[in-house]
Length: 125
Image 1 (cartoon, rainbow, N blue to C red):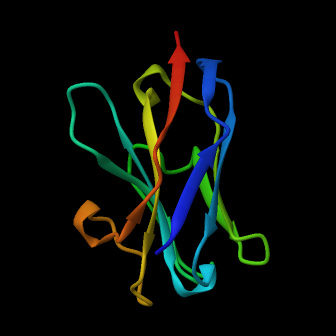
Image 2 (image 1 turned 90 degrees about the horizontal axis):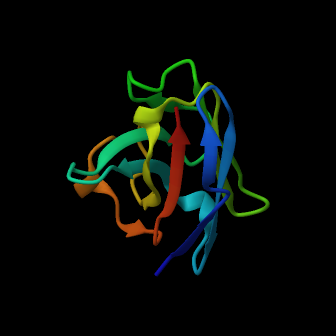
Protein backbone atom coordinates (compact mmCIF):
# COMPACT_ATOMS: atom_id res chain seq x y z
CA UNK A 1 0.00 0.00 0.00
CA UNK A 2 1.04 3.57 -0.71
CA UNK A 3 -0.51 6.46 1.17
CA UNK A 4 -0.56 9.84 -0.57
CA UNK A 5 -1.30 13.19 1.06
CA UNK A 6 -1.64 16.40 -0.95
CA UNK A 7 -1.11 19.92 0.34
CA UNK A 8 -0.69 23.45 -0.99
CA UNK A 9 -4.09 24.08 -2.51
CA UNK A 10 -6.25 27.13 -1.90
CA UNK A 11 -7.74 30.24 -3.46
CA UNK A 12 -5.72 32.36 -5.88
CA UNK A 13 -6.48 35.10 -8.37
CA UNK A 14 -6.18 34.50 -12.08
CA UNK A 15 -2.58 34.90 -13.18
CA UNK A 16 -1.27 33.77 -9.83
CA UNK A 17 0.71 30.70 -8.79
CA UNK A 18 0.40 27.77 -6.43
CA UNK A 19 2.63 24.80 -5.68
CA UNK A 20 1.02 21.51 -4.77
CA UNK A 21 2.95 18.87 -2.85
CA UNK A 22 2.19 15.20 -2.40
CA UNK A 23 4.00 13.16 0.23
CA UNK A 24 4.06 9.39 -0.12
CA UNK A 25 4.48 6.74 2.55
CA UNK A 26 4.20 3.00 2.84
CA UNK A 27 6.43 1.69 0.06
CA UNK A 28 9.54 2.73 -1.82
CA UNK A 29 8.59 6.00 -3.48
CA UNK A 30 11.14 5.67 -6.26
CA UNK A 31 9.44 2.48 -7.47
CA UNK A 32 6.49 4.52 -8.73
CA UNK A 33 5.78 6.93 -11.51
CA UNK A 34 3.64 9.77 -10.19
CA UNK A 35 0.83 11.75 -11.70
CA UNK A 36 -1.44 14.69 -11.02
CA UNK A 37 -5.07 14.65 -12.09
CA UNK A 38 -7.94 17.03 -11.51
CA UNK A 39 -11.71 16.93 -11.40
CA UNK A 40 -13.99 19.91 -11.78
CA UNK A 41 -17.64 19.81 -10.66
CA UNK A 42 -19.76 17.81 -13.09
CA UNK A 43 -16.74 16.67 -15.10
CA UNK A 44 -14.69 13.52 -15.29
CA UNK A 45 -11.30 13.27 -13.67
CA UNK A 46 -8.63 14.32 -16.16
CA UNK A 47 -4.90 13.98 -16.56
CA UNK A 48 -2.74 16.99 -15.74
CA UNK A 49 0.90 15.87 -15.54
CA UNK A 50 3.03 12.80 -14.85
CA UNK A 51 6.66 12.04 -14.08
CA UNK A 52 8.67 8.82 -14.32
CA UNK A 53 10.18 7.11 -11.29
CA UNK A 54 13.56 8.74 -11.93
CA UNK A 55 12.21 12.14 -12.88
CA UNK A 56 13.79 11.82 -16.30
CA UNK A 57 10.53 11.81 -18.25
CA UNK A 58 7.49 14.02 -17.92
CA UNK A 59 4.17 14.44 -19.70
CA UNK A 60 1.62 17.23 -19.62
CA UNK A 61 -1.91 17.81 -20.74
CA UNK A 62 -2.06 20.34 -23.58
CA UNK A 63 -4.18 22.64 -21.41
CA UNK A 64 -1.37 23.11 -18.86
CA UNK A 65 1.75 22.77 -21.02
CA UNK A 66 4.05 25.74 -20.50
CA UNK A 67 2.27 26.80 -17.30
CA UNK A 68 2.60 23.79 -14.98
CA UNK A 69 5.73 21.89 -14.00
CA UNK A 70 5.86 18.50 -12.31
CA UNK A 71 8.93 17.45 -10.34
CA UNK A 72 9.88 14.98 -7.65
CA UNK A 73 12.34 14.57 -4.81
CA UNK A 74 12.81 10.87 -4.11
CA UNK A 75 14.83 11.60 -0.97
CA UNK A 76 11.78 13.37 0.46
CA UNK A 77 9.17 10.99 -0.98
CA UNK A 78 7.48 14.01 -2.52
CA UNK A 79 6.11 15.02 -5.90
CA UNK A 80 5.33 18.63 -6.73
CA UNK A 81 3.14 20.48 -9.18
CA UNK A 82 4.15 24.09 -9.75
CA UNK A 83 1.21 25.93 -11.28
CA UNK A 84 1.82 29.34 -12.84
CA UNK A 85 -0.40 31.74 -14.77
CA UNK A 86 -3.46 30.09 -13.30
CA UNK A 87 -6.81 30.47 -15.04
CA UNK A 88 -10.35 30.14 -13.71
CA UNK A 89 -10.71 26.95 -15.75
CA UNK A 90 -7.94 25.39 -13.64
CA UNK A 91 -10.37 25.34 -10.72
CA UNK A 92 -10.80 21.74 -9.59
CA UNK A 93 -9.95 19.18 -6.96
CA UNK A 94 -6.41 18.03 -7.67
CA UNK A 95 -5.34 14.46 -7.00
CA UNK A 96 -1.93 12.91 -6.67
CA UNK A 97 -1.57 9.30 -7.89
CA UNK A 98 1.05 6.56 -8.00
CA UNK A 99 1.65 4.13 -10.87
CA UNK A 100 3.74 0.99 -10.38
CA UNK A 101 4.72 0.94 -14.07
CA UNK A 102 8.40 1.63 -14.72
CA UNK A 103 7.88 2.80 -18.27
CA UNK A 104 7.03 6.15 -19.78
CA UNK A 105 4.61 8.17 -17.60
CA UNK A 106 1.01 7.24 -18.30
CA UNK A 107 -2.06 9.46 -18.63
CA UNK A 108 -5.06 7.24 -17.94
CA UNK A 109 -6.87 7.29 -14.60
CA UNK A 110 -7.30 3.51 -14.73
CA UNK A 111 -3.54 2.94 -14.95
CA UNK A 112 -2.79 4.41 -11.52
CA UNK A 113 -2.79 2.20 -8.48
CA UNK A 114 -2.99 4.59 -5.53
CA UNK A 115 -4.66 7.94 -5.02
CA UNK A 116 -4.58 10.79 -2.54
CA UNK A 117 -7.70 12.28 -1.05
CA UNK A 118 -7.56 15.36 -3.26
CA UNK A 119 -7.12 19.06 -2.57
CA UNK A 120 -9.14 22.03 -3.77
CA UNK A 121 -7.65 24.66 -6.05
CA UNK A 122 -9.86 27.65 -6.81
CA UNK A 123 -8.86 30.37 -9.26
CA UNK A 124 -10.93 33.53 -9.17
CA UNK A 125 -11.34 35.81 -12.17
